[in-house]
Amino acid sequence: MKETFYLLAFLAVVFFWFRFQNSLGQNNLSVKDFEQKIKNTPKPQLVDVRTPQEYKDGHLVNALNVDWNANDFVEKVSFLDKDKPVFMYCLSGGRSVSACNKLQSLGFKEVYNMDGGIAKWKAEKLPLSNNTTPKNAGMSQKDFEKILAQKKLVLIDFTAEWCAPCKKLKPILEKIAKENPQIAVVPVDFDQNSTIAENYKVDALPMLMIFENSKKTWQNQGFLDEKAILKIIMNYK
Image 1 (cartoon, helix red, strand yellow):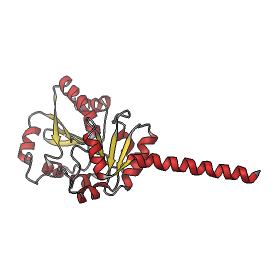
Image 2 (spheres, helix red, strand yellow):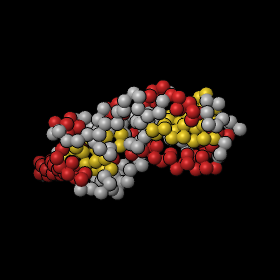
Image 3 (tube, rainbow, N blue to C red):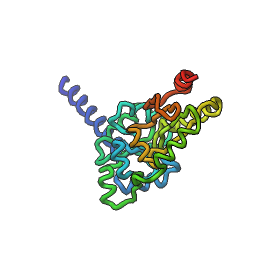
Image 4 (cartoon, rainbow, N blue to C red):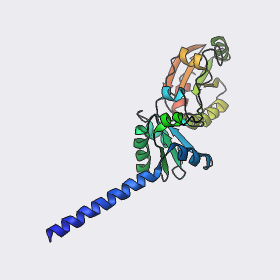
């Protein structure tokens, strides 16, 4: 009797294990299938889970960069729509598999991993986007200093198209600029102004800085809500 019970229990474990593996396999797409799936999906949510430096060296077109190894990974992916497909990749597939599993545990309904990562994508000679700009691209330091001189108080928002928290911060800053004319709020694109970003040691986004009489007096890396930003601004009155 015991032998029969143990046999049935073992078969049940094997059955659910293979179901689990098959379930993962259905979301683990080859490079070509991954590419085709993206093309067939309206406005796909495409996420590169590598480091920002890896991302800058070349990434899939329209991919957002959310570093799997960063402490704020869960916070950043929370801006994605759980009811729409999410496509994830890394260098070879290891980090993106872990990231896919995390999203599934967070309630995302449809998550796809690119098997082999960007290494296989390159091997297939498929197109990449590269946001790395020449050192002299974008505004010069003199141009930036002219922006800082336009008002006594200037709030600089270092931002990027691929930065999810930056997108959430944008309407907040626009509202603050409209309601607080004493301060100039200026967005600076991180990718298009690499020289400025390097000069001010911007190594993560979003990055907010306040300049008073052209001198930096405050900075913050990461998302802040309207109340927190206004509290800082009020200290300058």
